Amino acid sequence: MDESQRHYAAYVLFNQALADHLRIHSTDLQCVALLDLEAGPVSTGEIARLTGLTPGSATRLVDRLEKAGLVVRHPDPADRRRALVALAPSAQERIGAAWELPGRAFSEVLERYSDTELTVIADYLRRAAEVGRAQADRLAKES
Picture 1 (cartoon, rainbow, N blue to C red):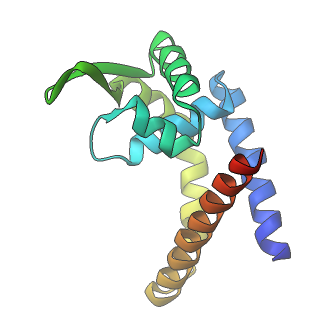
Picture 2: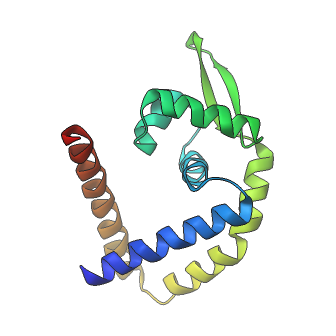
């Protein structure tokens, strides 16, 4: 547990440093990173779910990201009343360039592990993320 807490604290510091380097808010960086993992454009409601923000806060986040040129809105072909949000190509280039050196450093760490060990690590990270989301939901409901 101690190492898990150290990892979390170090990653929060890294995320903030990268956001500062890119001159964006750390929440904006997290949203951009999550959008990069999605297969395609997502709704603002889905962004709220991914980030844990309220729908209104997620809308303001998307407005801020759009103004910064990091995302673009597309009409939803299934429902013309709503828009879907995707990363702007320039955002992928900008974030990708900033992520190049850290990404290599993280990859070097992972290269030290066998495929079997990586499977265990990925399983732990996936399960820990699920617990984190569930606990965040629980705490939000208690507030």
